[in-house]
Image 1 (cartoon, rainbow, N blue to C red):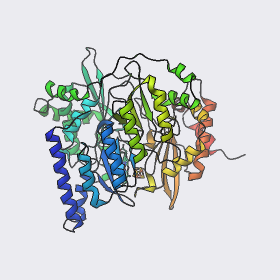
Image 2 (cartoon, rainbow, N blue to C red):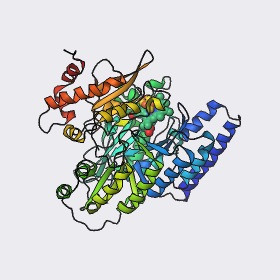
Image 3 (cartoon, helix red, strand yellow):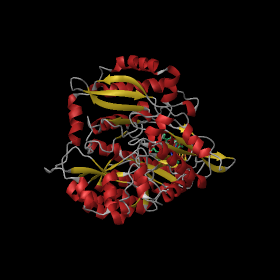
Length: 551
Ligand code: HEM
Ligand code: SF4
């Protein structure tokens, strides 16, 4: 994990002091609201329905147990005792008091964390695969590249006032676990035929009002040019991106208007001025950053047979082994997901007590470190397989061993109408209704891999467009309704879901999902996942079943 040097620490500390003074002046009436607004956004502070919301960055989703304990302390001391993990490897506090935010930022700075550039029209937290560095299918560890981007982007003066917010995601594995195709820029690291590291650059993906899958604008880029090329992309966007209409200001709209080919030509031209300047990365700098991501001190272990382990144990544990334990590149190790999706807990929420217990378990079982996934879950990346059962026994009483990773009830869900002023409908109670209805673990496992994503409005914070089943809150004459889509996906084969038809009331949704699942069960071939069936048969059979009149 990257460690701040004196220079990093000083920048973050100075920012805290600066924001402390800005907040003081605002509260004293010396700084008008419209002048305070961009300043607070640059420090992660939104104003939402009932209270401010503070968004804290978790660079590439890595967090140490020490940082996690601090987050637990902050949640208890300055909030209501819980935190919310988001779809972009960030963490949100829903109830901080404005006057205490500078103190929170000071606490964060003491453990090398901050909330800088987590809001506003700037380059946001760069995200990646939660299994980075340990994934069995990894080609290149994306974390050093994320860190290089982080250092370049966080205080980049030229990109502090972009037309709109800007999100970058990096992946270096065969599977894309970072939803790179629905980001403003998606970066795929790979090895070329000579085994040299190269990046494929996609741009113009994004969700929200006009969802789009990104296009390849550079099939192969040498690593030393990563920053100069990103600079060029951002410059072209900064120059031509629309500023007259907030809804048309994202890079996806520009790329669509110009076509990806013309956009990439403009980038090439801009890049030609930058390529051989100081923006070029030196090997020394790449090595320096890579040195922070060396492997932990793995003991020599051999793989144990997880099927045998499962057979000798309780059935809950068997489910958990099957769903929440993932292959690891090192023999004798596994990665483990704690889904923050126990029924009746708001998806992505964790209490201060849970965070403290998780930190202790991270120290004991996983080199004192944790990961956050864009599915709003937490991960122990390095658990010795022979200790899996012991870890599970510890997680169970904490309500953190729900064996549903990747299943229907492991849903992505935005805060919706319970917190967000923009919502058309509530999401959290809907998530709970669905979890209650589909709580039969046998049935969930039979259905298999299924991403259900819920957003409370078309801003799509809950990624509903790329859910295998996506649910969107809509407003019909002042009443909460929900529109249902099927067929979305966020991996390497990303696709946008298609709307089934007219929307439903909250209490109708579990039945609608039941009909969708029954249609799948009827039509699937053996081995076919829900998304495969959707792609093969299209939405028509689902539509017919869902809207069939009762006989
Ligand atoms: C204060 C209320 C809000 C809450 C609680 C909220 C929550 C979230 C969360 C949790 C995410 C996941 C990503 C992240 O960590 O940045 C997100 C992303 C997103 N937010 Fe919000 N958000 C709020 C306000 C807004 C506003 C004001 C807009 C725009 C008008 C917006 C539009 C979006 C979009 C479009 C995404 C992700 C989709 C994408 O571009 O890929 N949100 N939001
Ligand atoms: S999708 Fe809409 S309701 Fe949900 S958090 Fe985002 S802006 Fe708020």
